[in-house]
Image 1 (tube, rainbow, N blue to C red):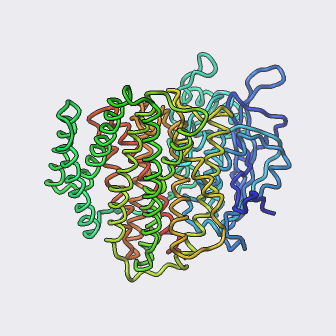
Image 2 (cartoon, rainbow, N blue to C red):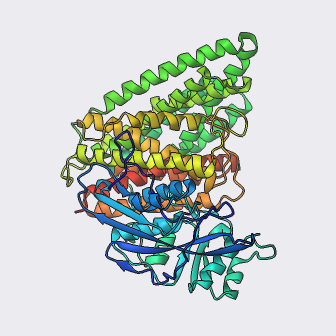
Image 3 (cartoon, one colour):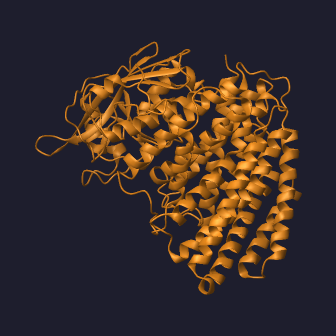
Length: 623
């Protein structure tokens, strides 16, 4: 029996044995030694570390066995099938369910298998709650899907973000004591947990583990952990360094040169200020990169400079006029711009979804290029809600919205068109997918909506823990969260069965955007410690930039590996390879620390689209 949501699409509210840190709520615990990591075909018993308190209130920990069963075969359903019966009966807690949903979604994406053929079931021994087993359960689910064994004597603790990052947890000393008591010899921790203040004077977890007879190592992401557990890699094994194809370089260079002209025009029309001078310097850097034959770097610089310039122009204009005209006039202008943007987005989506003239690879890639459109539309809809709702922006917030909407117009008029141009310029005329394009896209649409639901639930249940998600730390409406809600409502209306190709293109664009916006919100808060002031300002620098850099590097490596293997099959993934190239260049543009963080956010947004695009193409061409 597969439990499904009331709207007919598959639900990813999956319950698995996850554990928490100090927030652990546990009514019963069964600790058995599963150090063999035994595998029976596609059935695995995964050792999940837990920590809590005993009847005296003292810290304690142990191992909870989670059984994962997975198969890859036609399920008779158009969605991603997850059996919830066992864990529902065991009354797993809300954080447990939310974290497991994310683990199942991440594993399914990383498997690069057709999600409509994946069926997963889970079992636990008792009621338990908390998110910190998400990482090992992602590893275990992926291994079960692939039919691979886990290394004996090894266990792990850590949260899982939808981008595959492994996040920090609490209760490490108690978990290590529990692992040693249960006979384990090695434990993987989130790298940030290798030094911990838990347990008073116990700070060096490697040394503390050694005192218990444990080898303790740190990991950053699921890819690293999966190799530790299985000895294999997540992405196809290749030593190739992917190089952009000539037609992609040509198309990308053309978009960069066009962007340079736009930037020149915008600078010529603007005032001569210190900010304008800084943007001129960026323009000169962009031109130098183009002249040196580095178009991806040039495009990354141009994206940052142009979007920043138009946003600053809109904010300055609003700030200058607001005292005389008043908030009511500014609000009316903003609502007019919102309506215009939404009409433009609908027109673009309708026009660009007519792609029957393109080959199948381009058809698969088009929804990912149209993510610029569905994202801008969702932001505009979220802004509209804040302007017409019961919690209006602060006076400064109106001009922040003006800057954000100027950026959204740039997304629709410039960057979306550029992304589509690269898709159309990349040719794969001889490629035939294993299934019709509309069926491939429909299956992934169903799955990505379910995965988006999982992200949204995880955000509310684990990260926000039921707190109101409507305001940012600065007190402004949370437009990104409102955009996520808009995308969720759009997803509800998408039918589960396969539609005509042009309809599937638009639906897939909405589904992937829903997933990626949720990925960003969860990863920024959980993995990167990023405080995002909203949609108009640059995010604050993180305390430790290492996790963000690792996430960029890992995602870029995934695109490289998939693109290299696909090229060996005579398939060129032009749009994803170009997007990954300029996105990674944005992450490496680190002259200004604050812009460096913004560059990494840009890079990750691009790379999350690219990784999923490559995974879809890999699954669609793998028998």
